[in-house]
Amino acid sequence: MLKAVVFLSVVAVIAYFLFYPWLKNRVNRKRIFRWFIAIYIIAIVASTLNAYFLN
Image (cartoon, rainbow, N blue to C red; front, side):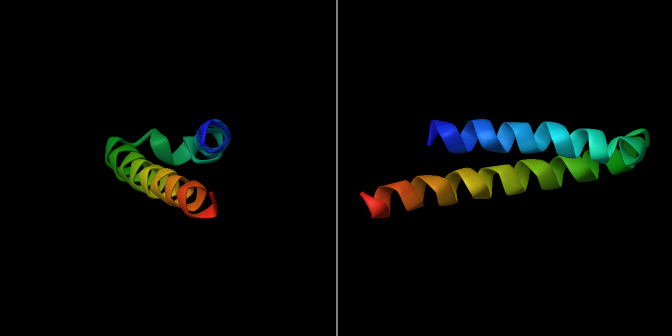
């Protein structure tokens, strides 16, 4: 699970630099961060369930 969290963090940093022009606007920044957090939580839950059911 730690490997998945580290991988997701690296992807989040890369995505931050890709979406940086849209992050200059406050409204876009809030919307994008909200989506990132939602996807991050879903991915962590899916990774945890996957590790639980595979073992």
